[in-house]
Image (cartoon, rainbow, N blue to C red; front, side, top):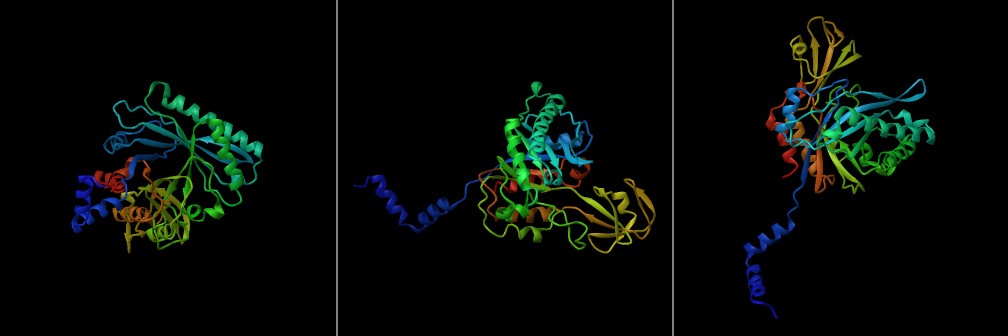
Amino acid sequence: MFSIFEDKFIREMRNPFFLLLFLLIGCSEPKIEISRAFYFWENDTQFINEDEESTLEKLKIEKLYVKVFEVERIDGVITPIAKSSLKLDLPHNKVLKELIPCIYIQDDVFVKASKNQIKELAENIAFLAKKYIVENIGMGNSNFLYNEIQIDCDWTESSKKMYFYFLKRMKEESKKEISCTLRLYPYKFHEVMGIPPCDKVMLMCYNLLNPLNNANKNSILDTDEMSKYLDTDIDYPIHIDIALPIYSWMLCYENERFRGVIHGVDEKLLSYMSSKNDLWYTMERDTVVSGVYMRMGDRVKVERITKTQLNKAIELIQGSSVLKNETVVSLFHLESKEINNYQYETLDSIYSAFSR
């Protein structure tokens, strides 16, 4: 026998308005909880400047991923090279909670390495990451958490076996969560490229194209290319976080021959150029910028990211099966010249868009 409340509920459900409202509530997707993060990828920098510190505070950034080492082969020897001397001291920042040391490793490190070499590398990296945290950040005297180490490596089919073994060893040696970067190609074609044995991955939603082989496309973020990797539902077996770009660069050419890259867009240099479209510029005078000697007639490809591109990228991600209930969204990277190219509202909207 129904109670009077059950009977009332059934009668109300016969009302089309209440039935529609019930269906809408029942079918609504849960809100995604976003942790706001930034990458800090500067080499040989000891301090975050005032603009960068202000950005962390205004945007309520909770996590900072810092590149501390690169690993490469030098004369056949696997060698970690320190890249950051950042000393993080932000006494007024009450939001930033966690610092994640990041280690970039060249793919060829794993191609011809033995298990003993990889085991030793994992031991060294775990030790050096902790040493960096203790000496540069002073974890014993701060409120920052140190729970995770992130490995950045574009592994291939030929290197994945030893790379995956390295990730397992890192987990054992460090006693920390291990995350790794994941490009969109190994995300979509994971049956071929394998699933890295780590706690979570950071999906790098940029740099899909070779900048030297795609003259008429923005190689940093081309949303048409990006859509090709997010066009199917993929049940990726480990947690996915998201990284989006807010950086820029200028690719310099002399007689169609690549001569160098200038990181960031130099507005003074732009004033010395003429342009026929948004990508390609031509030098109108001789000059030297960032150690690159530019001659009149040289061509420069300028690649930067617009708010429209970022919004389109977010739509593609939201329309895919990537996002889960809790996700870290990180911007690459924390650098005052790049940050100043965007209004605060634009950067804030990148994070808030994922929570809608």
